[in-house]
Length: 606
Image (cartoon, rainbow, N blue to C red):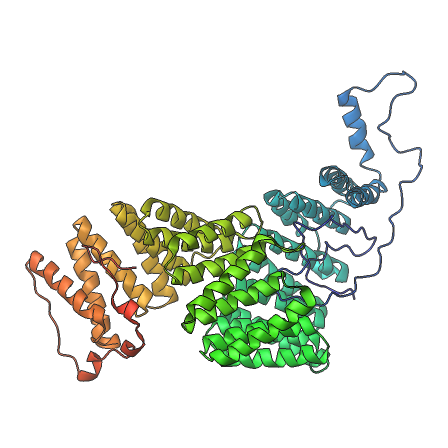
């Protein structure tokens, strides 16, 4: 039975490779994009060359008519070209030409023409009513070339057609073709930033693979991890954790203890646990992954894990241990990769963050400047994504230094690096949201609103319109609209934010309560006093019954409600509450910054 493995169509790969197989046809294997660097695996055996077109005299040739000594007209030549597509040897030959054209560096456009004609030939030669694996394979190749040209929408339509060709019930070859098609389609949706559709395709591919190979095949584990990484990108951490656990279970059965596969799984699981705030579990996974890498002599990978361990210690405020982990990684990176490698810059950024949090501002600024020097003159092989990520992190530190203008400059540079890169819509939307906050802080409200609205549009397109982050961005967009006196627009953003945050975080979450307060203030500004009263009564009821009244926002909200009721000629009906309900269980965790939020005349809060 052939192996079904997860495959990704490269978008910026150095020259596109298209393999033409006689029996089992798969799209091009991907370069890893989500997971940590992994050891490359040996590729499948070299494909056999397809038969060249036979010299059969029965084949119509699109050549000059030698008897007349004249060239055929375009219409006559088109008819001859169309009839030649019915030659069964032409499809494999044209796919070979497509592969050779790209390998020779002649460019993908010519290869695309060959691949499209090959697909037409396979379609003409297919038996009516029977699925054609050759046609499915050629469509995969066409889609891969479209992706290399940045024409992702066309690639999607081609792949949606390709996945309809195989019939999984007909055996392993059809299962492989269907699996490859769904995975390639998922990758293409990912490049378009449509993560929800991408994940659906990966799930369908995994289902086909498990039916063909069983639930515990090692190749199923690779696809489970691939799907887990997609869930992480979409911030669906519970689903990601389930997939990663499945991967670990399979590798425990089929791999020796402390294997590289298990180490990669544990690094991903640590990332998921960190995102969920389970730092102790994340640290445990990282230590086990480090031990596995040490056993396999992977010095640079051990250093990369040390950086992650330092991040966990920093989150746990175990600063001395964090410094030790970072310095250990820094020593390895400098000796193995050089002083100007982006890995060195990354450690500098981490140390800058750490020293800021420990009050050593001079050291923090120095490390920021050292990292920026590396990013200003990157060594060959440094990706735009690495530089953009580093600049975005440094901008957050400058924001803490209360230097919003400098932070803005770095965010703008980061976004410029990513704006032409496919598959970065989610990252760009996050940068735009941060820029919106920065512009808001410096009172540049029009630019703030523009950034927020652009981020909202990208998040909608990428399938993150149900995430808590999306709700927070909507709330910030509403605040920018309020500052521009666009109250009608603001109320729409606040209402949508309320709906999302109620579902994702619950009514008692601080973000949800903030949106309630902003919505009440907006209703008040619009003259919808009854709606404002209704919301404030609901908020006060939540605080009295579940959150406690010691929260500093309680008195403010109570005062605002009293003013609205007085204006409406009403009074509030309030039942006596027990003493235990008057104490805010979270009051001791609120920082001074949180408890001294500034409000506008209407009581808005960010």
